Image 1 (cartoon, rainbow, N blue to C red):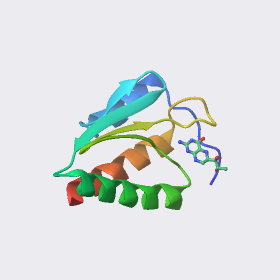
Image 2 (image 1 turned 90 degrees about the vertical axis):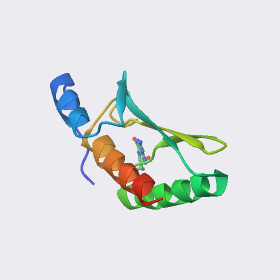
Image 3 (image 1 turned 135 degrees about the vertical axis):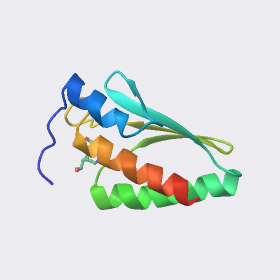
Image 4 (image 1 turned 135 degrees about the horizontal axis):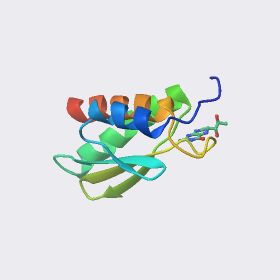
Length: 98
Ligand SMILES: C[C@H](O)[C@H](O)[C@H]1CNC2=NC(N)=NC(=O)C2=N1
């Protein structure tokens, strides 16, 4: 995969309008998802892991019982790139499927 370019603030704002569950926090975007129960939360994490491996782009995930906190940033670029928004969309699809 080619090196991802940092997005400008304007590009980030535009992309966030298409992802209403995500908010910006400095060099990252975040969303929280509440699953029906703990096993479902873990299944979401497993499915997100599959997407992350396919993209070779990985989220930070905080698991609190049935609540998941996802934080996305492109560490190698030092900020937000198109990869983070692609992964955010995939995470939304996984969450919606559970
Ligand atoms: C070698 C491999 O491509 C890199 O370590 C990848 C893996 N996953 C990654 N995930 C994220 N979020 N940021 C990165 O910079 C990153 N780098």
